[in-house]
Length: 330
Image (cartoon, rainbow, N blue to C red; front, side):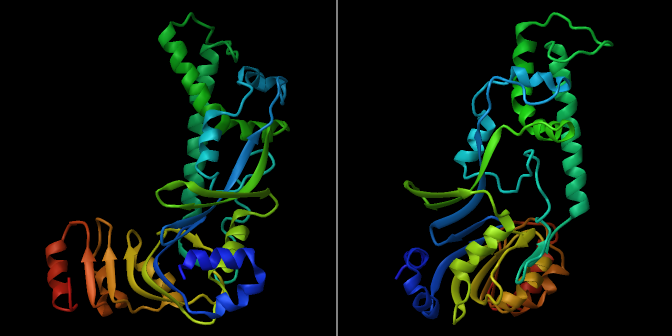
């Protein structure tokens, strides 16, 4: 029976779940990401959906009177995010990104790579940039006062450009302004599971629940329901996973992999996955553009029967000679 049919029958019929878990499963293609699992051609994706419930009253103090100019409808960016399955990160009560669970390890989790300080610097820098360009546009359009820069007459081109700046940045800055000023968040949040088959929009199914569980916890629960508590190793022909972040895999998960695709962070990825799938593969496909001689000395690459380099990279001739002398196929 096709794996996704088995899984979905099991999810809807607890009575057959034990038998389904006890039966060996073979998967042609398995892909894991922070908020998504793809089995063959079917994708299961978690996301936070925002439903706009704004009205015609400002939600915060006079310092944020620019909110009066917001269109009282669901913003375009929010609509696009919802259509794509929702945000891939958690939100706090003001709509800002919530990191309280993002770096917390749960039993069985796999850390591929993370840079908390670098991520924080990037987030702070982006927010500062958005604040600056948004305030400039607001001042030019008379939506915010600046005694040192009195309002000047703007032509249609500048006006149109400022409208685009305001539209594209106001919703990114708004949560931080609300948090600073004690405003009311104008959205209702939901946690959504989207199940879809590749190439078939009509097959998409959506399950939406109250946003009471953080994405890492929900992803752990979802992957445990799908992959966890199996009596035998999952037999996977082709495997690929995210090259950074934390994979919320079930505790005790074991995979038998024929072919693994690895991009950036090759050594960290192979080392992190070792408890789940060992270090012996028939085929390793290396998809990044930059690898070092140290990378190809990894035991998994040394022991692979076949190594595939999909991109030409610096020093590749010497690496090809090294690999050719060691692996059965290149």
